[in-house]
Length: 182
Image (cartoon, rainbow, N blue to C red; front, side, top):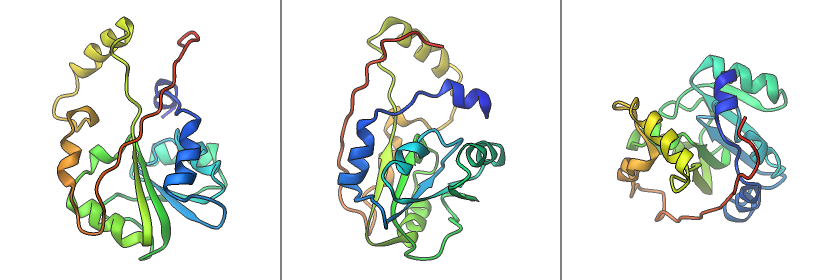
């Protein structure tokens, strides 16, 4: 879990405003971060002022998240069996995770926990392979992916359309890393 945290990039600060504007996250609202991992995205959700609940299937990742963010309500669970009541959250966010459970069973479960009018946000960081060292990193990582679901294949889109969810909308944020890579 510690290596996972160090190896994952942060998210652009503009995404917090997008969460507020597009998903209507604010004080008095509740958001579920599904597939929360170690909590790399969790601070962006906390910054909205919404009550944050996280669900993660891997206990070691969840332990790291709860140690870092002890005020966040955390549950071990999966996208196919979310341990929350019906219509209990205003928004669901999957950051770097949806491609792992992109099928109708997960969407039905997400729809079940969303309040009427609730929204689903799917978020990924993308590598800029136009940068030579990033292209080399991409090639090294991708050679070991096997049959693991990957965002960039677009296979996750096959889960849509799905009853209860409108058409997909895209928003892109740019973040240029100019400092040294640690």
